[in-house]
Structure formats: C-alpha cells, structure tokens
Length: 45
Image (cartoon, rainbow, N blue to C red; front, side, top):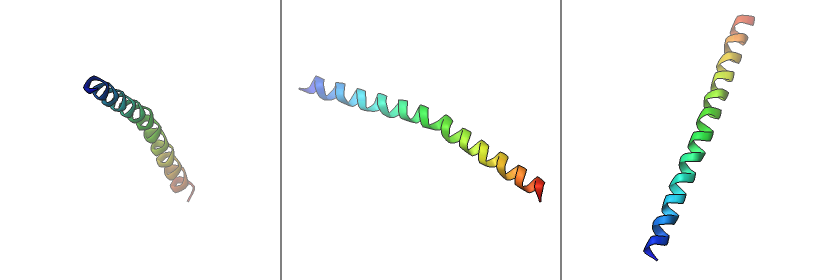
C-alpha cells in the first residue's frame, strides 16, 4: 500500500515537471511574440 502511494506521488510529480517544461517555452514564446508586436506597433506610430 505504501509503495503504491510513493509510486503515485512519483508519477504526479513527474507529470507536473513535464507540464511545466512544456508550458514554460510556450509562455516564453508568446511573451516574445507580444514583445515583438509591441516593438512593431511603437515603430509604426
């Protein structure tokens, strides 16, 4: 029973790390795009 709980916790933490690793680059890319759009808009003014 205890082993199963440890195993479940390991899977949960592994999935959490995977989700963070997937979302972090996406967040950075969207941030970069919005920054680029802001620069382009300020250049057009």
